[in-house]
Amino acid sequence: MIEEFKPEINGTGLRIGIVKARFNENIGEGLFNACVKELMDKGVAEEDILFITVPGALEVPLALQMLCQSEEFDALIALGAVIRGETYHFDLVSNESGAGITKVGLDHNMPIANAILTCENDEQAIARMAEKGADAARVAIEMACLYEALDDFLSFTEEVDEAEQEDDK
Image (cartoon, rainbow, N blue to C red; front, side, top):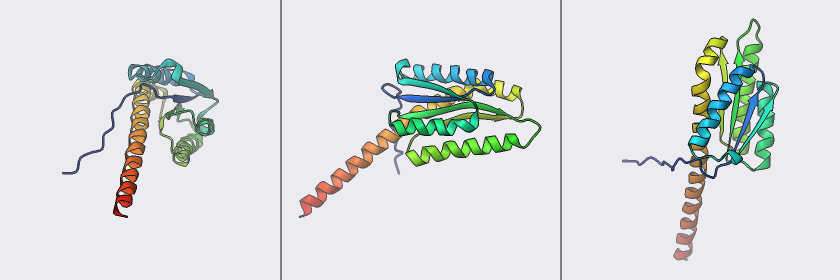
């Protein structure tokens, strides 16, 4: 039976950056409050959380990229809400912000929890904001712990392989 690789999940010592879109401010605040509470409940210290805001969801990926480039964070979180209106703009903003966030994470090998809600109306967003904010915190912590543990495991495996090759000489 193949054993699952499972790191310990603990927020202690992690540095987390949060980028929140100000558009749909009340939803963003609900996401933020739930997110920070969960981060701190899971051991992330208040002084290890950097919080910045940007005008809207389309600006979030650039801010995340700047945080990645600093190399100061173990994981990042994107917060915001895009509510469907009467135009195609909803689809554009939803798709482009999501693609941008994913690209930044992959380009920089950075765990990013995406909690930019894409909802049909305010009621849907309000119903989801607390759970999705807390979920983003859990995802960020878990992925940061996985990234670190997997990096340590792969480095150890490489060291063992090198030592075995040295012994074979």
